[in-house]
Amino acid sequence: MSGHAIDARALTRRFGSFTAVDAITFQVEPGEVFGFLGANGAGKTTAIRMLIGVLQPTSGSATVAGYDIRTQAEQVRRRIGYMSQKFSLYEDLTVQENITLYGGIYGVSDRDIVTRTGDILTRIGLEHAGGELVREIPLGWKQQLALCVALLHRPAVVFLDEPTSGVDPITRRRFWELIYETGAEGTSVLITTHYLDEAEYCRRISIMVDGAIAAMGTPAEVRRAVGADTLDEVFLKLTRPGTAA
Amino acid sequence: MSDGPAVEARGLARRFGGDAALQEVSFDVAPGELYGIIGPDGAGKTTLFRILVTLLLPDAGTARVLGRDVVKELWNLRTRIGYMPGRFSLYPDLSVAENLAFFAALFDTTIAEARETIAPIWVQLEQFAGRRAGALSGGMKQKLALCCALVHRPEILFLDEPTTGVDAVSRREFWDLLARLRDEGLPIVVSTPYMDEAIRCDRVSLMQAGRFLVTDRPAEIGRGYPRPLFAVRGSNILGLLGALRGFPHAAAVWPFGEALHYTDARRDAAPDLIARELAAHVEAAGLTGVAMAPIAASIEDAFMWYMAQEPAA
Image (tube, rainbow over all chains, first blue to last red; front, side):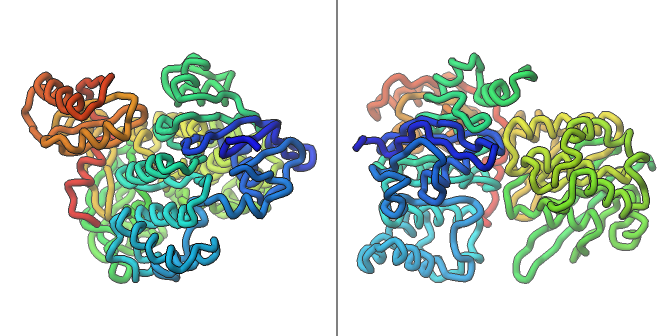
C-alpha cells in the first residue's frame, strides 16, 4: 500500500464513445492542498466522483486513504469528506442539528460530537448561532460551516468542489485560512475553483484539458513549464491553444 | 433612443420579510455605457435587476429605464429590454436553434430579422445549432442565453451574473462579446461576483448587503485606496500571515494569490519607513527570505477595505 493520500494510476472513465477522464495519473500527499483545475467539461467532476467511490472507473486504478476505489468503496467513503457549493447542509435544520446529523452519519461518538461542535463554532465565530436555522445564516458562514461539517469525522482526504463560488472576498479568504489549517492538521485537500488567484494558494495544482492532465506541479513550476507569467495565461494557453495572446 | 441616461435609479429599496435586500440605491447608466455591479451572493444584485427589468416592485424609490418609469410604463418597456437572468432559464430539451426561434417568436420577430444583432455570438454557436441546450458546456449555455436576450433587438441589456460558474477562459470570451455589443452603442448593465471582471466595465459599483459601497471607473477605485498597501512574499505564508497581523500598525492582512497584501493603518506613513519596520518585525518573528514592495490597490483590495468599514451584515 502506498503512503499517498490519493494515488491515481491511468484512471479512465468513458461514457459511450466519449472519454470523460483519459488515463490520469497523479498523487496527493498527506496534508497537501492540491488544486484540481480545468475548464467546464474538462472532466474534473467525473474524476472526483470516481475518487469518492460513487462512480466506477472504466479502466485504471486509484487508492484514496490507502483503500482501492473499485473494491473498497465503502471504506473510501468513510475516510473522506466531501463538500460542494450545490450540496452542503440542510437548510431546515439548525446549525447544531446539522452537526449532530452528519456526526451520526459518519459514526462519530456522541461525546466527540459535543466537543467537536464547540471547537467548530468557536473556530468560525458562530458560538451564539448553534440554535439558528441554517437558512437564516449568511452564505459565507454556511460555506465555512459546511467545510467544518465535512471534517467532523477527521477524514484523511477532503474533496471540495467549487466551495467558494459567489462568496464575498473576505469570506473567501477566511475559508482558505480554514483550508490551510486543515492541511496543517494532516488532512489532504483536493479543491476545484474558477478563481485562479486561489490556485496560487495550493501547494500543487493540476490542469485538466479534455479529460487529461495537461500540466501539474507547484503554481510556479506550471507557469514556468507553460511559459506564462500568470495562471490566467497558463489557462488560456492550455485550453485555447489557437488563440493565445 | 433618447439622449437621457439609459438607467436612472433613485433611492431604490426593497425588503423581503425582515430582510432589507436593497437599501437606498441610486445610480445612472449613460447611453452606450457598460456598467458593472460587482458583489457576492446575497448583496442584492438580483433584487436590483428584477426591479429594473419590471419584474419586481420597489418598496421605495423610483427607476427609469430608457426614460420610462419601471412601474408605470412596464408594458412599454418590456419589449425594449433584453434580460438574462442569473439562473439558466432556457429549455434544456430544445435545441440551440429551437430555443432561439422560440424567444424570437415570443417577441413577434424572427431569427432572420435579428441576424445582424446576434451575428458575433451566432458564429460561435452555429456549429451546435442542433444540439440540445441542456447538453452544452457552461460557457456555450451562457452564449446561447445572451443570444436569446438579444434576439428581439433590445435597446438595453441587463445581464445578471452571466459568467458565474463559468471557467476563466470562457468568461474572457463572454466579456469580449459584451465589449463588441457596447462598441455598437448598446448600453449594458451586468452583475458579477468576480472582482477581476470589473476592469472590463466603463464604470462599476461595488455592492454589499443591499448598498453600493462605491461607484467609479475601475481604475479610479483602486487609486482611491485610502491607506499604504504592500505585497509581501515569503515561503511560510501561514506564519507570515500571523506575524503581519500581529504588527501593531496592521489595518488588514489577506492572502492574495502567491502574496499577502498588507494595509498599514497609518494614512501618511512613508513607504520606506513601513517597509523597514515590517522587515524588522517579521525577522524578529523568525521569518527569513521575506520580500515586500508597495503596490497599487486592485478592485478586490478596495472591495475588502470598504466592506470592512461597513457595520457587519
